[in-house]
Image 1 (cartoon, rainbow, N blue to C red):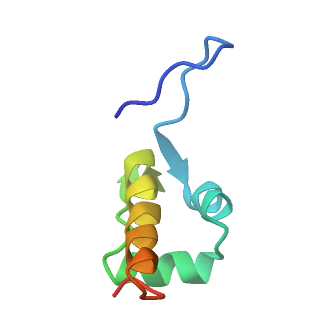
Image 2 (image 1 turned 135 degrees about the horizontal axis):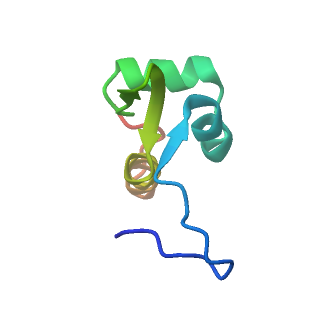
Length: 76
């Protein structure tokens, strides 16, 4: 699902810097990088910057929601 233009006619961001992804997820950088090392939060490098695609942020949250609904506390 591709993000739609907002009413202000500005395209939403497709890629987020690590600090923006952390803020969106409500986690710290150390947790972010631990999740990345575990393979649960993919990143990409563009022009020396570590970025996270919006779909990967949504997938990460969705995976946690499914796990919690099934009675588990964390995705492993």
